[in-house]
Image: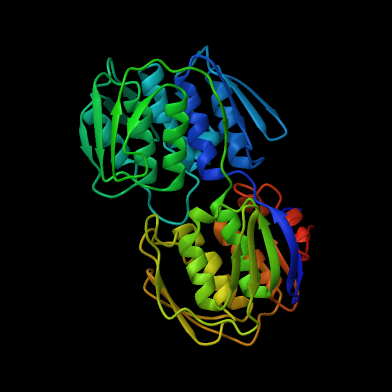
Length: 417
């Protein structure tokens, strides 16, 4: 059955290890396309989005082998330049293969990527930037073809700091002729990881971690072994779980340096946090405090991916919390499901939510509609009295390797049913 069952109402106690980052590994897999050699990616999370990306790479001729958490990609032979079907239309992240394919073979035909219900993510930013590098784009009903004879380095300024567009430009620019200067680049940790991967493979990239990237194209790339960093959003999920349910947990390998905005919010709610070389210890105050106002922002601000997870934890915090969503217009899809459990939440348009803390939640049957909202419902289930059934587990499996195992490690009664 495609559901997760939670018997909640108990505080969390225990420890679990944080998996490799979903948002980092997918662009690394795309980057491996640029390398006519073998790349070994370690600490790869076993999640459905990685499986879909593997199938896409195999479909164009790559040899891909997964053994445990080690992924081997042999991209010496590319046989196809067409990407279609469910692995494209069902996964938004497939768009990052656009820049990689143009850099490798100069042409790609793709179905329009899908897999997103949290808001519009138009690919115009990607296509317009690539056009400035000499790419011609021919759009048809349901798909498009992008083609270039020689990618040309240029100056590109993104109108918004888009993670996906930044990744595509980087992937194309490392194979372009000349220098590309990318202004208003996204600064998320996964962008840094992608740049570090490419630099270790032989690319020349300056300004890593900043808003301006300078990429000298045309350098020969070679195969490497690279380790995926831990997933900050998965770590944030369990952080918000203990903030909602109470208790004391330890998150091994939590990427603390990437979680400052989340940890600040947890401390404002009353958490006692201790950071060590091994990970992150969180003790939740029994009397959790509301957050008077918070808005989602690009990194290093509070992540939009964490918004619904925080909302779940705030449903029983003492006082009134206000969350403003500035990135995606449909991030509040979870509200009706939380209200079924007894939460008191009022939406003001599609950009602001007012959460009035209640004494407790009650378990019931709810429906996940997307990845992070599904995980937030599991948090709510851990907080609620009685049994909660979260349907559509497949959404959660896009980003969580084994969420039931992790919660069981933290002492929760969570299982697949």
